[in-house]
Length: 351
Image (tube, rainbow, N blue to C red; front, side, top):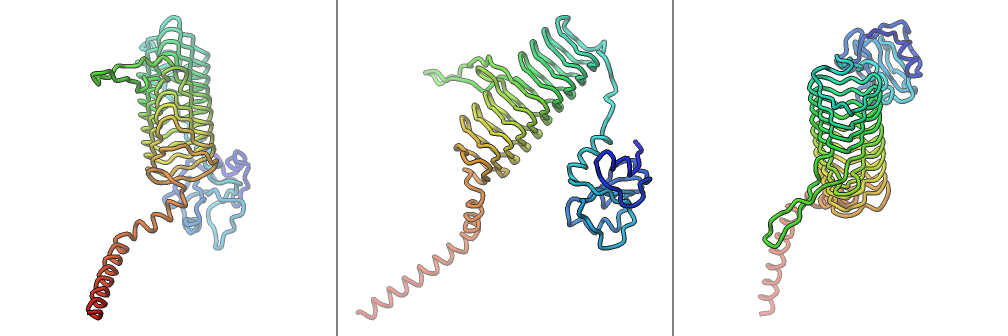
């Protein structure tokens, strides 16, 4: 791909400061960029690189004013990071290398395929599946009976979508994720043996959801496990049966949500967070990585940290004392010795 600085400014609604005819061939990190690259400045600590970079153009904020001579072409935009995302989408468009339905795919005759669907070799599509227009199904994907896949959704290699599930439009599911595996439902009998409880629900994933690689989204025992529109899940995440995740929530890698918990909208969950079952997490909550949530979070837009998780600010205050415990213990021992010596001295005086 080859464009000019002015082309980029037009795409982003920005303003060129420098040569609008500057040729751009790809993106690059500001400290490593070469001629032809376009880079960006969103973190002030990298400002010095603007004056030394070999990048042909740099995205900067509208209010950026250079303090030294700049040899690169600047493109001023309202929001640098958002503009970067738009730009990378342009440069990152990769042809998937196949189109139509491969003769090495197994597609049940009852399946209904939309227009311009691409299905690669090794794909298995079961009975009564519906696949929307423009969907792209990579090799070795399995789509179970009665499942529906929306318009322009992409399932990367090795994804497994079990029977009766629904995936909306413009979704991206990365390799080896399993959607609709049985929830972890067992009951113990008098002999403490575990008997399986059938999981007869499904999974509903709404529009514009992206799910990373190697995630497991369990089907509901009854009803549906629901992931609402705009949710973004990192790699290696467990979503248990009957969980509901509100719109535009983001969850980092290795997090786990136990059965029947309800996570609100616009929630931010850090890596390795564990959320216990049957809980409610309020809209806008932010949960620091490695925290363990064992109770409901009722306050919207609140911040939490620790195991069990407590208010973020209270955790930091508590930690300030916790890390000083060895010194505090030593001081207490010293004080105890002084008190003992003082008591002994007073006893001697009385004698």
